[in-house]
Image (cartoon, rainbow, N blue to C red; front, top):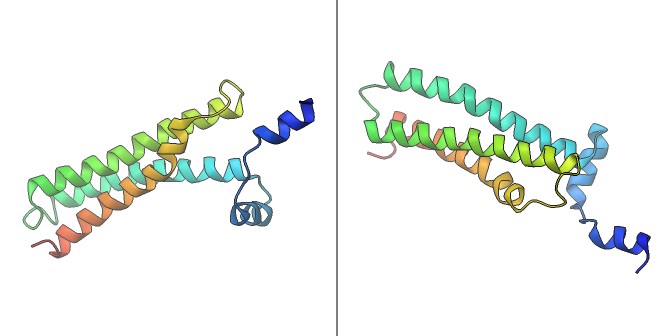
Length: 130
């Protein structure tokens, strides 16, 4: 197998929507993924402070302790998982590793955890769950 064939066989095909989005923004798809995870991490930290503040002041009577702890836990896990995914992405960019199962697992998990934590908090605050 020639060197060029090896390069082609190891490249991962990017979805068409990622390529279009990257062209619109003038960046490649890897940088968009990095920016997305960085944003999830930053928003998780900000939301963690907001949930702690609102859960202990304005909604202290409405939200049970288990709900507040669960919401904080999910949001904190979102921030931690996006930070770990960012580290894996940097290692991939620098050529330290060739592929990362951790990144493949954490990239969709981080925003899911964040959405779950925020949804739980808002649901408890407005009384959806009881």
